[in-house]
Amino acid sequence: MPTPPRLALENIIEVVRTARPDLRKSDRKVADLVLSDPHRLLGLTVAETAHLAEVSQPTVIRFCVATGCLGFQDFKLRLAHSLALGTPATHSVLLKTDKPTAIVDKVFDYTISSLDWARQHLDRSAIAAAIDILEAAQRIEFFGFGASGIVAADAQQKFPLFGVPCGAQSDSHQQIMVASMMGPGDVAVMISNTGNTRSIIQSARTARENGAKTICITGSNTALAKACDVVLIVETLDNTDLYTPTISRIAALVIIDILSTAVAFRRGENHLSRFTTMKTRLQDLRTTDQL
Image 1 (cartoon, helix red, strand yellow):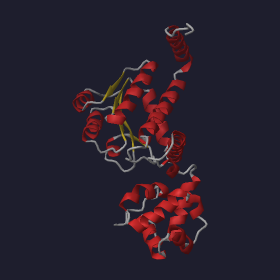
Image 2 (cartoon, rainbow, N blue to C red; image 1 turned 90 degrees about the horizontal axis):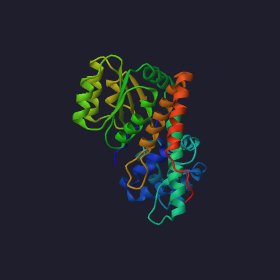
Image 3 (cartoon, rainbow, N blue to C red; image 1 turned 180 degrees about the horizontal axis):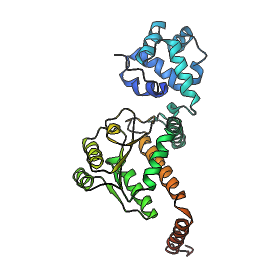
Image 4 (tube, helix red, strand yellow; image 1 turned 180 degrees about the vertical axis):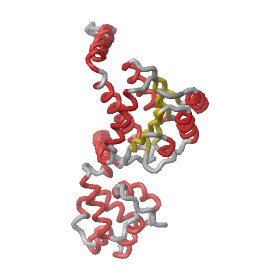
């Protein structure tokens, strides 16, 4: 198995978990030992690790290299860093034998630790810049596909409350059409975890060329980031396993909440009064009858 690139922001626990299916059979024994109790491994030597995993010491070293580390000590340093972030994400690895109570704990643990990871790596100055742009916007359009389209729809529900026309575009043709009609005073918010969707990138470039401000919510090192004025990099421990929650979507929803809340606070007392009135009217639509 070729050695993967060593990225500083990678959580080594997540690296082990996602790499496990592609490891050699003997290496998977070491991976299972790590995933079963990552804290325990911090106090073990190479020999002790090999004994517990029932493999040879060279296999332990090979496993460490396969996960992108320079050796056993480097692996333990990165493991200690990952554990310092909070609840180990590996505890959320779901098994077919898990009972409902275990599934509850694992999904919550994975979500909490992933959101904490995203918070630790969020650029606060970029958030401030995005808030300034959104506060001054005359019109806002949100762009996203799939799970990101759900985030765009959520944002489109929140921002019109500030008296600003908003749209949510999740169709590639509609995205290009809307971006082509944007101009100075407008803001395009592009949402894409991978940041490599051609239509989203083209829409960002088009809106920007027309004079609109562009903001993106995306992952690290994406093509989309190069096409936008303000880049909000949302680092998560997301993966493509069938039984894990889409953390990137949850993290992006949190970012939308942060942006909308900050903009709301800048609207002043007049906006607060109107918002309170709106909430009262919504309350009147709800039944008070006892069932």
